[in-house]
Length: 238
Image 1 (tube, rainbow, N blue to C red):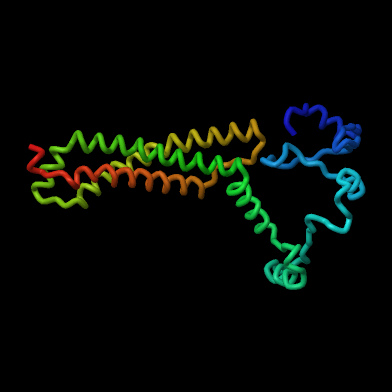
Image 2 (image 1 turned 60 degrees about the vertical axis):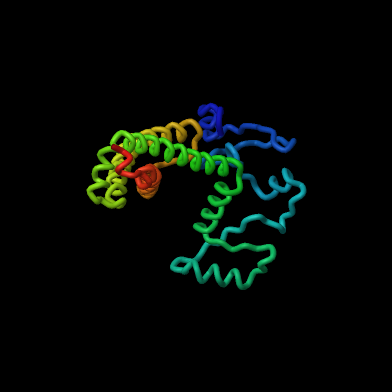
């Protein structure tokens, strides 16, 4: 939890009980454990079933939220899940593996929670801003070299040649922007992980996705920047 002195956890782990109040009831904290941070809560409290029913009087012992099933050694998980789904009612029971539960929670956090939706819009807006900036750079370059491009066009070079030239510039811009951008992202990940306690890490697959996305964005900007050149009349440029 945030803003809790580490010395307090050390005293609790040493055997000193610490009394807190939750749900209008006093509870003794007898120990602590480490758990990753998240957007739902700053901490997690594990209590016995009797204490849980006292804290949440609208709950009953016969209606649990989650039941963990330990598979026998060597037991294949997919057949076990299929058998449980066939035997349990679908109306009020959902059987999932750990990976399926993690994927479902991630989808919920990113597509239904306000924080995830805001982050998603931030990514979209950032991509649009990047496309516009790269377009301005490439469009200015096309305008500065319009006479040279017109000469090539008068000689007989096709539009595909100009697209290849602009796409090459776009890829160079993408790579040159990707390197410092990745370094900055890694630094921001480390800062957020330290300040918020969230388990953030720049993975290799994420870096590859970022690189391909950056190249695609810059290529799209290049394609838009060459539209003016495609409509230009070489005779009117001299």
